[in-house]
Image (cartoon, rainbow, N blue to C red; front, top):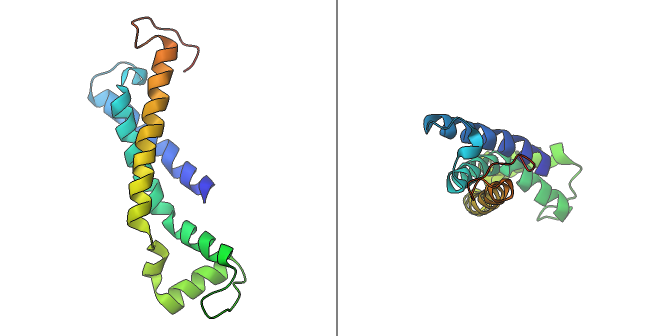
Length: 134
């Protein structure tokens, strides 16, 4: 579930930063303010979290080994099929709201901090520009 999440989140994050930077008239995406990059991280995390929630539900069920009647799961496809058939497809989205909320907050803090410290290391916060940290 982490790999699919990252495959959605990181490209979205970079695209959101690029789009916002162009919209704001910056010549370099690195000139985008850290709090705006944090917002891009929050939004990309929310989308990735929502998109990968079914994988998280399936992973959690696999970790339980068996369903509530004690019948063992046989694998990913078996879990997905049984959840949809026995409980309805909407159960694959169980926990969507809290997952999206926490991932959004985490994305804001993580990407905002990352961009802030990249700027600090590059001297962009102090008025000098070096390019050793991206």
